[in-house]
Amino acid sequence: MKVLFAASEAYPLVKTGGLADVAGALPVALAESGTRVRLILPAYPEVLGRATDIATVAELPGLLAGHDVRLLSARTPDNDLPLLLVDSPTLFDRAGGPYTDDHGVDWPDNHLRFGVFSLAAAWVAAGAAGEAWRADILHANDWQTGLAPTYLRFIGAPNTRSVFTIHNMRYQGLYPSTVMTELELPRFTFTMEGIEFHGQVSMLKAGLAFADRIVTVSPTYADEILLPQFGYGMEGLLNARRRDLTGILNGIDETAWNPRTDRHLPAHYDAGDLSGKAICKAALQQELGLTQDPDAPLLTMVTRLTEQKGIDLIVSAIPDIIDMGAQIAVLGAGEPHWEHALRTLQAPPGRTAARIGYDEALAHRLIAGADMFLMPSRFEPCGLTQMYAMRYGTLPVANRTGGLADTVTQVQISPGGNGASGTGFVFDMTKPGALVGALQDGNALYKNQPAWRDVQLEAMQRDFSWAGAADDYGWIYRTLAPHALTGSAKLSGEAA
Ligand code: ADP
Image (cartoon, rainbow, N blue to C red; front, side, top):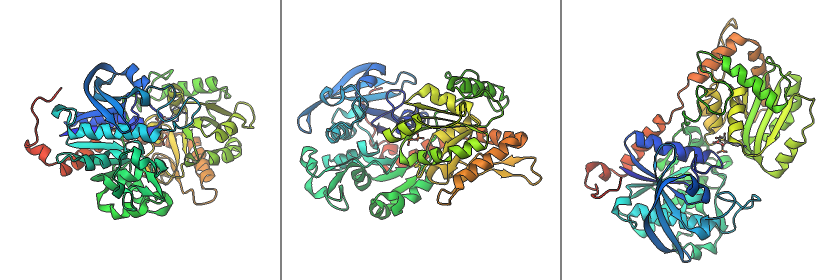
């Protein structure tokens, strides 16, 4: 079974959010379970700088508006995963992020950048770069590669099927209908059942309409996106394709996120000995200018600053948090309004800290050094940070939605109050005061240290490995491409 896994970012080569974590880890887990996976990425400068063993394998000239693509093979620096890079310097060799310039403004030609990337991935999967690179499955992810299944359908690839994973329905890759010509999309695809969305082209909808199977990143989110509240107007199409839609919970990278070995921490610990966690907490309080108090519950949040993540609810709850005697620290980057609100927080000294920006190392220290981790997301397709937090013995306070509902188990105090089970504090955002109620529950449990320890240990021992997800994806691949198993489609001359 040969899979071409297409994504617009992958850790540790280039990352803006959870998609990168998934694209960095799932292909590795798939490879470990016997699937032959190649990860295909745009050749951004940071990717070219970090990948190893780079070599040219093919030229794909004149893709969309005459863009020439050089296809490069390479390896990831840490785990030697085979990579293919779509090198088109006019599109990808730019200073800034994968989607935006240095000022955070979207590149005006993102439709073309990701159109070319998607078309290149489809051609490679179909065998245009040589039989050695052909794939049985083209696995696309989110709107940036939403056109890949569409192109695959129309270039004709009888032995290649497509899977499309939705990591977030909120980002839809919407462009004016005039881009149809530039993207060389057949006119007849511009319908309500196809890629048209309220008069525009939606690259996300293209993936939903034309992929052979659709996956999203948790079972609860797979149910939620069938509803108007979470489907962003695409729930009709999703309901029509319900039988092709599956929810598969993401795992976490247990090497990068391991409190026993984490290179970003001042001390290490595990479920058998939590003394290193107290050192992490004290060091974090010092680093952030918080009062050195081992007994004050420390609440942290690491997030993109968007409405989705509920940062507004946290800012409103700060007086309650302070009243409880707790401390709070937030690391985030995103909407300027929320960056400003965090920079100008009014609070007694030593009780709150805010750091604006993207800081991988500080994210690890905030998750390890905290007692509770805040995730009041309005919706959360899967969410990774609550799983990282549990692994680090930091109890999530999370809204019951999407992957949060699937991963955090509400704490139950045992009769008599001398023990507890569960892994965190789950609340229902639609109920007024529910977040503050959950924080108060957390605060009360924190005062009962033996019961707190029970819950910490249960959280730390949860299995969030990728193996289960890799099995489920493997099953989908096999049902879609049984020919790949019989040997009838086996290729000779396959490159290593
Ligand atoms: P999303 O993909 O919606 O942003 P996830 O919880 O799935 O949310 O993944 C977010 C990832 O990005 C996690 O690895 C988290 O640690 C990281 N992250 C988010 N914001 C920051 C930040 N400001 N600094 C460092 N890492 C961050």
